[in-house]
Image (cartoon, rainbow, N blue to C red; front, side, top):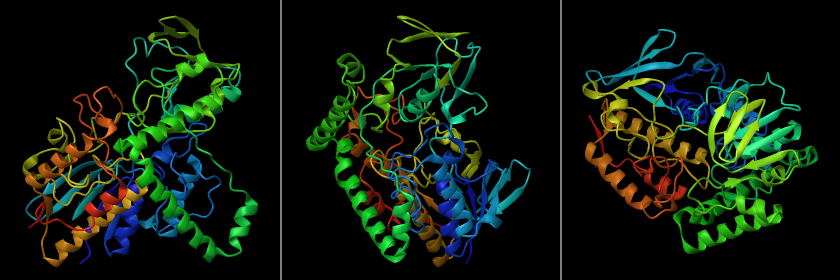
Length: 486
């Protein structure tokens, strides 16, 4: 029997849920606050924006794209890919763009959710699928005077296209994932660029390659063979990440030694200046923070118009940034300071059994079962929830497993003529106890490690504790000792 499913968010996760939900025969509605699908790839438009996972992995297995321009896809191309999914799978009639969800309330009597939207609509569904992502709430640093700067200023995730940076004195606060992509592009046009680095990052080479039109034309002469070779290449890259790159985070002696050496060799090869090299050498274990994958960040820092400032920022003033060692006069200030990742403050209110809200449930930290279900919130299936982020492989794989788990659960509901599926408190506790124990053996548990993966209480709420294969195994079947149907 078809279920009515509300998918909340039209990024990669929401689109996957909609496609597979429809294929399984369900009635799916997708609510999206913005005017386009794509999620983070719609929102992030800064120069140089790209995925640091190979494009052949950062796509869905059921919708391969033979037209990527580079081995590592650029942001606009990924946005185009998400829009192409709407056309390929006929999702237009299910999309409610410019209509985010403000509230979802569980109705225990009939086993349904009532969803309220920004436009005042109220609809009833059998299940909801929050697909709101982990990296959607820009984080601004708590620096004195942060609001005093009189020049143009913005967060990298809200790029201001109206400001021409040509010849400008530009400051970039931050030197992590988005910074290493935008800095090389800004450096090409800025008169002066000051990069304010609090902590250096481990960087490994991307070894990116442009896929020429001639190569695409050659592959098009035998598309069947091209798709077969692409599947083989995808499997090889996936297995390499899952078996070898994962060991940098699993913290095996071989993994940390190999990837530390790779990063140090990359630094030595690209930065001949020993003083600059010292500023760029981390003093914490590799993998503790996200390992950055880039070929052009280090060369950008050696340009004559670029300064790497490692002295601590004391305050921001109307015309620049004052550090412990001096003052930098600036015309533009860009915050490449990442996202808020530990509060899980969703843009909608969720009310579960007995009137409990998800915000109250998560006041001491977000917990879920398999990163998908939360005790007290039946028939709610999150995508990219707590402890499902990766440092070594592609989140698109994890999303496919989560959507598959949701569909298996809904099929069990139908088979048993039940109305509600919910993880038990004991099932959720046992799962999180085990994940916490497994995470304690990873590099993220290092007490000296500070990163967006970890909350102030030391708990790692973001990351999965194993490789992707182990997550696939965990989500392959419905564990009836943990999940109850009624």
